[in-house]
Amino acid sequence: MIDAIQHYGLLASFATFGFGALLSLALASRTNEATASTLSHAFAALGSLIALVFGLTMLGSGATMTADIGSIGVLQSPFTIRIDALASFFISMIAGIALCASIYGIRYQRQFFGHYRLGPFGFFYNVFIASMLGVVVANNGILFLIAWEIMALASYFLVVFERREAHNVSAGLLYILISQLGAAFLLTAILLMHSITGSWDFDAIRNLGGIGGVLGNLILALALIGLSSKAGVIPLHIWLPEAHPAAPSHVSALMSGVMIKTAIFMMIRFFIEFSQADPIWGLIILGLGAISSLLGVLYALSEHDIKRLLAFHSVENIGIILLGVGAAVVFFAHDNPFAGVVALGAGLYHTVNHALFKSLLFLSAGSVVHATGTRNMEEYGGLIKSMPYTALFFLIGAVAISGIPPFNGFVSEWLTFQSLFMGVAALPLATKIVFLAGAASLAFTGGLAAACFVKAFGISFLARSRAHEVKKIHEAPLLMILPMGLIAILTLLLGVGASTVLSVVAQIAGSVKGLATGPIALVYPTQVISIGGFSILDMTSVFLAIAAGVVAVYGMLLMSPPSSSMLRVPVAWTTDPAERNKRDLKSA
Image (cartoon, rainbow, N blue to C red; front, side, top):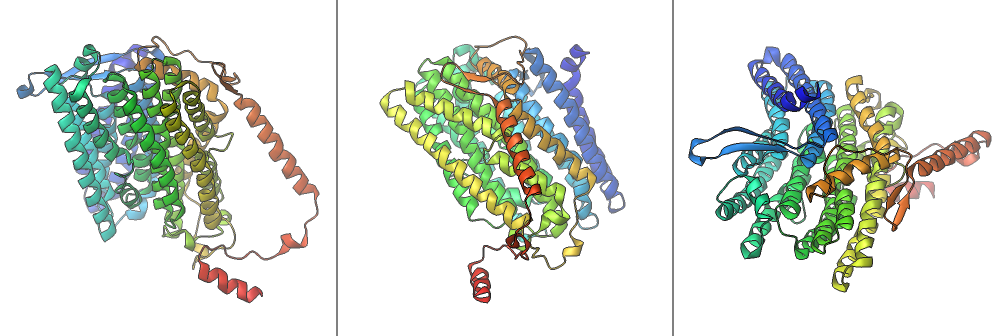
């Protein structure tokens, strides 16, 4: 059974996506749009499930699979794919989020029946998911660029789906322009790699022991610019807060949760696997991460559009991931493989954690927009009464993204801190300063993120409703609630069971430098996380302590009589200074 999954799982997944895409086009008429939408998302969910099983099976076996899949005659070289531990990790992450988003989309897309053509949407939706998987399995420069471009074009058509909104069209135009700019840099980098090796295959670079010298640095510079444009690294982030809000919410979850991570995947390939270790590049990546994390959260603090706020937090979290990846490059360059694995493990762990809590937040925001008809948080208020499940899931995502225990965001940010402090303790003085600045930016980012989501949750779900038609606001349907609930549970499990997950992530990080091979070995969820003799973390004890505290506080609230202050009529929560002044004058 396992052999069959490993040999045919990926092919079956792509075939399912292809069939779903073609079926959606075949049923593209107005009379069949409901069937087209439902079936396209159902086949996307099935294809994602098959890919998830395949990715987890490959990950558990620790095997590396390569295959030729044909060629274009003029290249005189077959296209090859490679599924190693790193690719299996990203396949599992992409497929898991796509599975939840596709189930959610079955019900979410019904609001567009009769307004937009859902057949073409289903086609591009299936192609989009398949292309993301194609990017991470490609072991050939041309095949990678083809998958990269298909991913960009498919996501562009999803962004401009609501094309009657002029802003969506302009957002899509900005997105595709930045995407093509980045693709041009990547094409140049791969052409230069071909000039060195005489082959389009990435294995040729691996066999050389990495690229170095002036030409190697030029390739890395081009790759960094091209990949940063897709990841949303500042200053190439300008498309992200425009395009992500414009897309339907389950597409926003995919773009923010996993699409931008394909750029992180290729950064790891280029800067750790394909190149000769150079600390300068590590420090550049670390510096970009520090700037992106801090500025991303500052931009988010000023937003009132709930989806733009979440989009800016994607810039912030990409920055946090780059702190780990940049630190790993520096450690490997200084011949410190243990610290390098810790730092890269922190980056990979935050990659999957962000995929979970950001997709949860976008799906929750989509439920709110679906119910209220607006993205403006100033028009919400009191939604916890009519949307209790959505409020709970948004709160879980908000706590996780703020790095508060016992959820998953806390563990990966803690691990990132440890890797940065290891650099402060062991590296030369000039490098220590950069690492210390990175740790400071991460500390500021965590505090500002918490403040931002206190505002977002309070304005949206607490106090009195500011909607004009409160009675029409309703909880999301079951098919939208279920995937959010699943992601919320995983967000908690990846926090409490962090020791098990980290044992897997550490082996994946080690495999990138050939430091770990063979089947993945799991540890017990209750095992203490130990970073050598540097620091330890016991997430089980943290969880039990927090649970005991919550129970104790709840018990005291139940036993204490209500005070007069608790009987006051709630007022609408607003951040508008004019409204606050008007209310203060009335109370005076």
